[in-house]
Length: 298
Image (cartoon, rainbow, N blue to C red; front, side, top):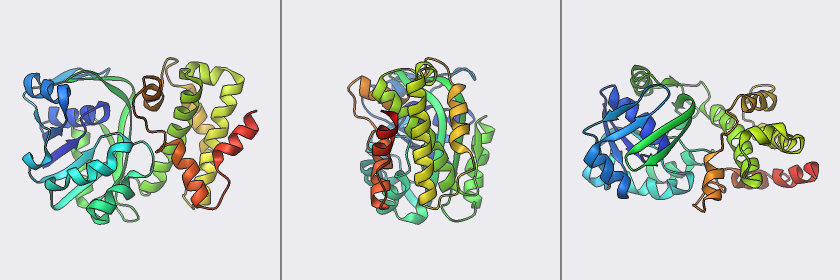
């Protein structure tokens, strides 16, 4: 089984690195200094679950040099997905499946528009990881988890093969019966903590302890749950309250990647996260959630 990781940042570098460490045939698509460091010195992963180095590591800038693969893990930022969809086409074989791991809920549709729906799975991951230096991935928190599956269809044997590969690599992997609901469950969490963190510039320990910002978190969680329910997405009862409990258990200094990108002046996933909540609500004919949050929080 040959696996390409398109985007070897914190997410792609960690999950692809674990697969490579377990003996899977993994090639990383990267660029710039990060690519050159991987090619020269391998991929170093620092993690509470054990450090390791993949050396030599297969890495390239041009997907056309890679050839056909069985699976493509898409680890780029959400705003990079449309461009990545076109660039990865040379790696597609007859049975290739594409697994998006972005924050948000737009990536499967964006990939399907270019690559055909039958090739594209729904997918999500949970991890806090980043590029610490070229060729060096640092996993700083959250138990690594990955989930994927066909949208509206039962898991296929090929999905089971990829899940088994992750489990051999020591990564908790699941094939949820409803991958759309699983993606929205994560979306409820990430849109709230990213958005409130970006507005306040505060770490999660402060966000959850100050009454006013804690209320903003609670409002943001509930608004996204209500949006999912309006779209007939089957979310678990009490999800907003349980997600706030999850936030209470995060390290006090934790920040969302979108928040860090905005604070450091980099392109961010704002449009794919909080922007998507407003856009989807507007398209569905409802009141944009952000306007209701601001009225309740002032």
